[in-house]
Image 1 (cartoon, rainbow, N blue to C red):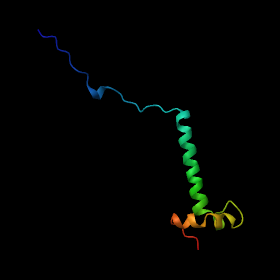
Image 2 (cartoon, rainbow, N blue to C red; image 1 turned 120 degrees about the vertical axis):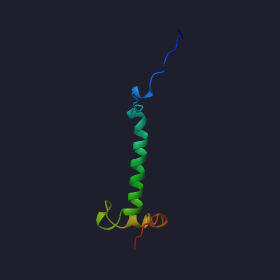
Image 3 (cartoon, rainbow, N blue to C red; image 1 turned 180 degrees about the vertical axis):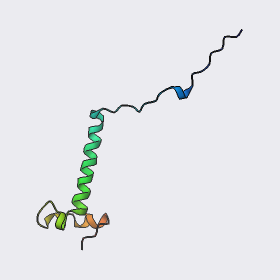
Image 4 (tube, rainbow, N blue to C red; image 1 turned 180 degrees about the horizontal axis):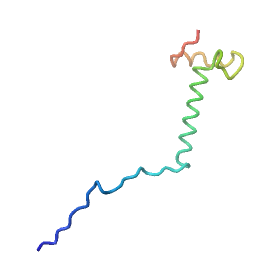
Amino acid sequence: MSNVTLAPSLASEATYPPSVSLRELLPWAILGAALLMLVYVVGVDQGAVSIVPGSWLHEFAHDGRHLLGFPCH
């Protein structure tokens, strides 16, 4: 007559991902959006898809464009 208890099975326990509040997620979302805008401005903003008219933005970001590997000529 031993008093043995069995450990509960791990398969029977439900596991859920931790909840992330909007307050914790917002700085990362802002950083991601800023990085995407930076890559757009440096790499893609020229020609038919340009949001900024004229060529001053292209000339301003010219060396950064080549540094990141975007062709522009």
